[in-house]
Length: 86
Length: 398
Image (cartoon, rainbow over all chains, first blue to last red; front, side, top):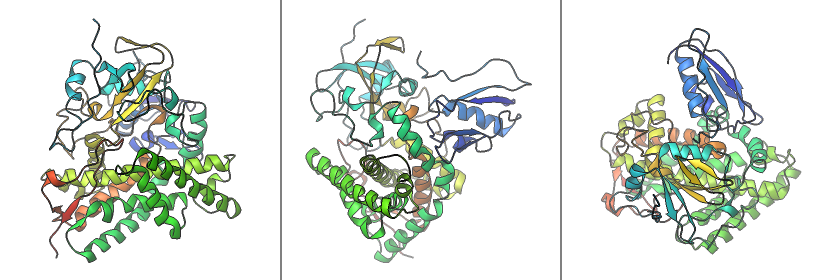
């Protein structure tokens, strides 16, 4: 899980909890007005930033961050299921 | 196979002040979502597993509205609760909740909260100095755990210094386990009245603080008063309980204080683990708005699901050796602040307060210890936020 990552954010879902900015501050920030996610780097290269970004996607309470392997990686989306309910 | 609904285990075991009620773990380990009979007779559900609680809180098909909710703990009304008072974000759903959340979330961002660290430091230093002047043997709840977050939330909201004492006393009654539900409601109403007066004053003379800024939005005075009271109450009791109970936990687990003194990264990890291990906001609830299948079981529309946050944060499927307090572990992913759209709005403030206040305490008083045997430390019982009534501590004077 150390390869590059490609990120998408869904600002409509975002609850502004700040988990992403806390976990991967090089990749995510928050809007000062409404607290919602700002994506600083949609394609962090392999390394600590990509690892932290993946963790942030998994932690996001609103399921607003989608992470999939970046260009040199595999092809499977690892989208956190909206709501996560099976 | 039909299951006999369980009652919510809600009493902690004697001598285990940090552990969830012992009846929860066997339920969780057998079936993380089980049928539960509520005190009002409703038959709903009890979620005890980490993945289950996380899934339910993230799912908008489960409502947070109080008026749909059967109270999980005894002592509540018969049948659903009254609707959330104006400004109480925890008891409403989208789109109403989204509107308030977006107006507020920008005030509680990671970056803004980090900028407050030096203000938290100033307040903690003042209180540690006062403790040093008083000398050993005092109640840490009264001397430190309660006033530090109280003053911080007052500053953030923009409560003038002269009125801070009054606000803090009013909000203390709201959570005082010694006062009746009627007294608590009355105190909450008085508190929002105080905030309303403040809001009116700030409309005339805008100030550079949270309430001052919010007077520039389209929120009414009633909404602002409700939001202010809600934030004050939410910010006061919870962090105070974490500082008190967290200190108690560190003092009774030899060797753990070192992690709090080993620099910012170590302190960050330690704070997350204390949040997980203590899970002070231990019980939540949601109500299904439609039929939803969870963990292969059908939760029907109208059924309430109780969320046993404490048990979920001790789920061995998520955290290895979950009942051990290990301040060096990575406890990220805990549900102490909840999950989903309602995840704690003030969590980044709480983190900054805790990672300043706890290390500062253990650095200033390296010999800090309990002044009474651990079993004599009085706990709050049957409150929605777990915590201590008092924490008698002492230390060696230098």
